[in-house]
Length: 248
Image (cartoon, rainbow, N blue to C red; front, side, top):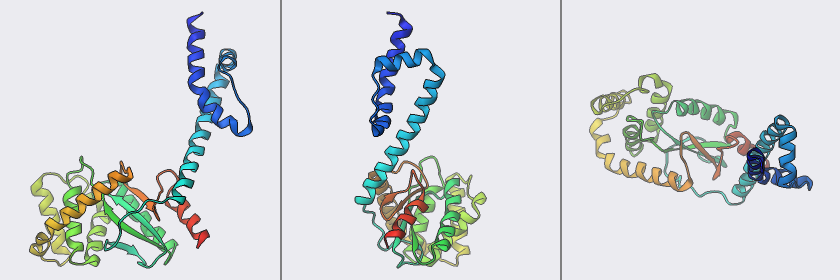
């Protein structure tokens, strides 16, 4: 058999699964041999069909996963954690974030918009997932939690001070510079550095627990959002918020 034909049959076999899943909705089934002929006669049209089918399958798969999550949402610990918005709001967004992540800085602004948009119905619980390649992120997360043990109000001010002035902290590195930046911020908040330092041991345990929990959930990057336990990765928080609001 011609090597090119063999290659076509192999490719056909690989993509048949995707195509058959999508087309099976309309009860259309394709045999590998017939598909190979389609590829041979009109490869450009075939590739366009494969790309379309792959997108359809990806969307179909994401929708199915989302349906399953609504039925079995993840359980995420939020009791006693720093919360933005109305604490009694029926919809909880859990945000796993990193204090040196530019996307997280943008997300912090986005969360403010959502809290305002869904006034009284949405709250945001901040949790830590500092990435290993951001040297400032983990120490900042530990200071944040140490401050939260003193005052949630001050912890929220700390959070906003970093993300609202992100350019000052985006490239911070080196232990001395990190400590200096964090201590300067503590002073600006009107807090005693020694009081914060006393809480660092407990704060480190909280951050460690957040990282572990994120790992169990499958969080791999920041920011990551869970709306009432439903992962918003593929659709965004607003789609899930709207769905929950319809059921209230």
